[in-house]
Every structure is written in structure tokens, then in C-alpha cells.
Image (cartoon, rainbow, N blue to C red; front, side, top):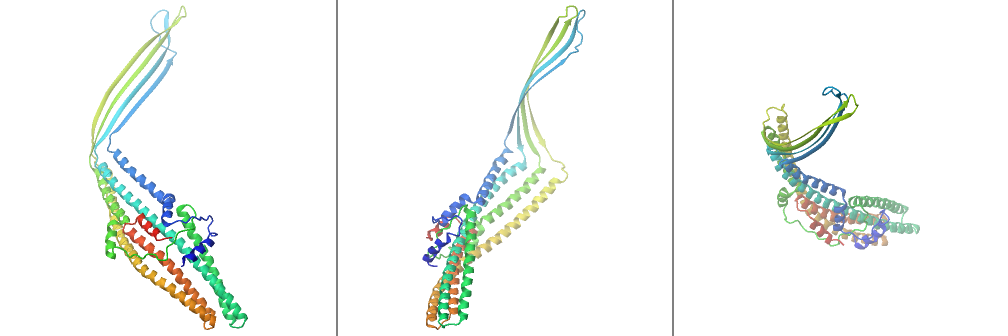
Length: 465
């Protein structure tokens, strides 16, 4: 599709978007927006950062655990019916008890040997490595999703442009047919056929506008805003063959570097460690605990007396302070004897889970090989298809001009012109789509091989204008 037609059509397409943007955006700029605004990649980043905390959590189980505690308390009580003391005229009438207590303690616990904790700490390193691979795969997937959405918008724009050009050409053909009918040069049948084709072209244009709106909404969902003016590929889009130029070499590379396959292999290793962790529940454990404590208590008992003759009252307080401090330590050894069979069940469960993980590895390897071969063959075939469709567009344009010339001199009918216009429209649309298919297959090939990077987007962006 000539760039002049595409740029002319973009002006008309602005009414389709709810919030049009007039600043042209390239593929790299759209990817950068997606990297900042796509909820899916931000979710994946949060999950990755959450997984990194597993290392600190696992280390906490083998590090010392130190706890400091302190308390203070006070109590007061009185007894109005104290026992009589002494003899004669003095007798007791009551008593009071008052106490203040303060204490603090420091306790240390340290695991000396626990096989499950040791294996868990080693397993965490693999879990973090897997999280890194999964996050990198998510970023590569964002590159693919961005390119797919971007190319979908461009393809919808070019399809709409082709439909508009086709509709206008058919409208002109309908107008000519009506004039020729009025002067008696053609039958009414040709006018009706031209009218039917024009009505169909109008319906196709409406459908193309709807598809464009859908793809623009998909782009807005990805980056969080409307962008309608996107850079498109140049007419001389480079058609680069894959390097290395062998499907087997790409498959070999993918089986080593594909991130999904790497993640599944790490899952199998993690499942293997889980078996060892569950078996560790049968092993003895050894731990050390120690503590120091200090406490003090100030208590006072006050007795109240009354002189029976004079009625005078007096009290006799009796203070009793006390303090105590000390330390303790213990070496704790524990051997599990019987736990109702739960350890055996957990071990067997872990064995089955590892078996499932190994099958997932095999499945991922086969899928990786299939996807790599499909993408490689897609690149090779699309190169030939783009070249063939480019030639088809030129041939269709030549054929249309010849048919229109024949129509002018009466050797071709209106139907012949309409048919050739439809052939040209399909050729132009398929040519535009084939170029985007070629680019997407190249990106999918590198994703399957685990080598897709931002530099690949930058290279494509350099081919756009």
C-alpha cells in the first residue's frame, strides 16, 4: 500500500478513536509505555520481588533467635479483720498487703542441626533462579504482546485504507455504469451489479472501522492510553533470513535457552529438593537454648492496731524486699519415632509431584521444539510470501488498468472491472498482513530460542517511518 494512501487514510481514522493522539509513536516507544503501564508485567514484577524475600525467610530458620522480655506488676489488698496481737488493751483491727514486682529476661535459641531447614535453604536459591527466569519470560512475552497489538493496529489501518480506496473506486465505477446505462451502452444488469458491489464495499468499510476500533482498544488496554498515529513499515522492508540458517540449530539453541523450558527444569529440581525436605522430618534435630533472667520484688505488710482505753490507732509496717537473678541453658536432641504415617505420606506425595514435574519438562521440551520449528518455517515462508504478494499487487494494478481501459473501449464489462478491483484489494491487504506476519514470526523465533531482547524491537523500529 503506498504511503500516501496510508497517511491520507490516517486523517480520516481520527474520528474512530475516542481520544486521538497526533504525536507519531514507534514500536519502541509503545513498548516503553507498556513496560511502565501494563498491569500484567507489573504484577509479574511484584511476584518476582515477593519471591526474592524467600531467601531471608529461609535464613531466619538457621540464624539465632534472640528474645527480650520484661514485665512490671503491682498488687494491693487489705483485710479489715486482722487477728488480735499482744495482750491487754491493744488489739489488731486490720492489715494491708502491698507489692511491686519487676523482671526481665533474655532468651536465645539456635538450631544446630535440622536437615529439612538445610535443604529448604538450598531449595530457595533454585526458587529465586526460577523466579528470575519467569520474570524474564514475562518481559519477553510483553515484547511479543506489544508487537502483536501494534501490528494489529497497523494491519487494521491498512485494511481500512484498502476498503476506503476500494469503495471509492467502486463508487466511481457505479457512477460510470449509470451514465453508460442512461445513454443505452450497457444493460441495467451491470448497474445493479455495480450497486451490489458498492453496497458490499460500504459494509466492508464499516466492518474494517470496527476492527480498527477493537485493535486500538487492545492497545489502550496494554499501555493505558489511546494512540492512533503509529509509525508503519517502509515500502522496502528488509527481509532477513534467520541466522543460523538451520531449523535444527535453532531447536538446539531453544532447548538450552528457552525460558519456559528452563523454568520447568528448575521446577523439577525444586520437586527433588522437596523430597529431601520431607525425608528430613525423619532425621534427628539438635538445638541449643539459653536464657538469663533478673527479677526484684518489694512487698510490705502493714498491721493496724487500736488502744482499747484511749482509742488511739497506730500501724506497724513490715517491709520484705527480695531480688533474684540467674541463667540457664540446655542442649535439646529430638528423634522422631512415630507420627501416625504422615511423614511417609508426605514423602510419597513429593515423589509423585516430582514425577509430574519431569513430565512437564518433557512436554515443555516438545512444545519448545514445535514452536521453534513453526516460527523458523514461518519466517522462511513469509519471506517468500511477502515477495510473491508484492509481485501480485503490481500485477493486479497492471491488470486493473488494462481492464479499465478495456471497459472504456467496450471490450470489458462493469463486472470485469469490479472483479479486478476486488482482486487488487485482496492482494494489497494480504501483502500488508504478510509483512507483519513475517516480523512476528521473527520475534516468536527469538522468543522460542530465549534470545528475544529490546534490541530486536529497536531493529524493527528502525525499519519503520
